Amino acid sequence: MPAPTTPAPAVTVLGLGLMGYALADALLTAGHRVTVWNRTPAKADPLVARGATLATSVRDAIESSPLTISCVLDYDTQRTLLAPAAGALHGRTLVSLTNGSPAQARGTEAWAQALGATYLDGGIMAVPHQIATPEAFLLYSGAEDPFDQHRTTLAVLGTPHHLGTDVSLASLYDLALLSAMDMMFAGFFHAVAVATSHKETTATAFTEHLTAWLRSMIGMLPVMAADIDSSAPPVYAQSLDLVVAAARNMAEAAREAGVRPDHFDRTVTDLTHRITAGETEYTASAAVTHARIPTTG
Ligand code: FVH
Image (cartoon, rainbow, N blue to C red; front, side, top):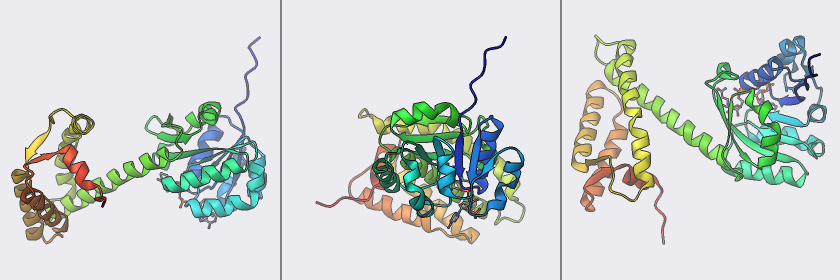
């Protein structure tokens, strides 16, 4: 006779926007008993048709499961939704996958702990259609016990990484990663605007070269990261004069193409100041130092 299998634990999902829906859907598919709540209840219909329970209040939703995952617009919305149901969190775990700042994560942890709840803050490094695929990974921070306890459930959504017990770490990494993505897209849009100023170029043709170039450049990042972490002479270094000359050319190409050159003009100004101050080398460590807001005193 086959050994009886333990049923997958109950989970509550608050918020059925594009992402919350994908999370609830994945948990249902994995065999969890899923309770959902959403401001617009009709969004739950397809999930209910597949076996989810639609709670009529946030309190009822939280009371249905030992684990509640919240994925709504922002922290203000989350706080407003949770406040009237706060007492229900006692003895339960709240995981916030709502995008927020490190300070908001710290504030929510303190609030949850005062209620006798355990709290994990999370960052989803995926878009909705990637949830529950090998491409999805999620960052968590906060107490280790709830992470270990709910790890199998959280792993349904994507590979879970626990970054540490400081609850602010997941949102810090999440926002840093999103910043890199945002700047990469801004770079892409700028480059396409410059390249397609020529009538014989299309974005598609140009992007073939751009992706090949970025793929090769991405290999530089671990080298630069090792330089930043080390006090040894850097592996990656260029002369500041060379980098200024390149930035001038990039500003000029943008101007000629009728594209805003502001970023490169600012780079020329900043690097020229550094040269005037006696710097000669462009290194990853120096670039990170100059990215910081100078502290006074
Ligand atoms: N979508 C993505 O690619 C990213 C990937 C990384 C993580 N983010 C974050 O996930 C949070 C939710 O994002 P989403 O994609 O589900 O967003 P929407 O589809 O816009 O759904 C928003 C949900 O929030 C509910 N909501 C909004 N305002 C209120 C309110 N005042 N009271 C109650 N609920 C509210 C909304 O409800 P409804 O409009 O369906 O009634 C949705 O459930 C977010 O933090 C991303 O940054 C997603």
